[in-house]
Amino acid sequence: MHITASVFINDDESGLHHDYDVWLEKLAPHAPVSQYWHNVGEDNADAHMKRQIMGREVVVAVTEGRLDFGTWEQIFYGEFDGRRKKRVLVKIVGE
Image (tube, rainbow, N blue to C red; front, side):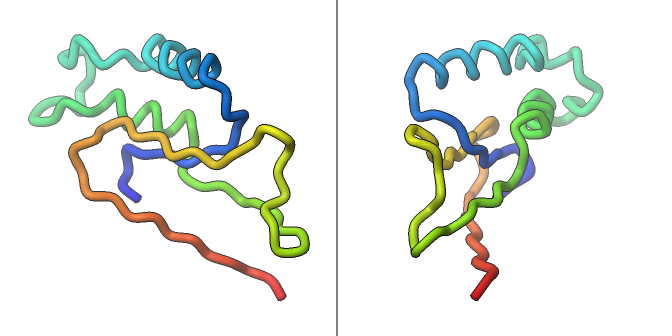
């Protein structure tokens, strides 16, 4: 994973996905890019901030071989600067 992407757990509901997009853009708007010091030679400071808010990893309990989620919960990958190569790392710790 790269520094401008996020992994988080929440309900899989389209209205919520839209609300996150709007909320994150209000908190860390992309434009104007000149508002961020990081953007001297870059243009992705907002993506770093969005990732900071949403988090970089999740811990999930596994019960009897299944992810132990609530009824509508899922793991999501948030991409805030889509120009980079990606990879996912899954670590399983336990018996």
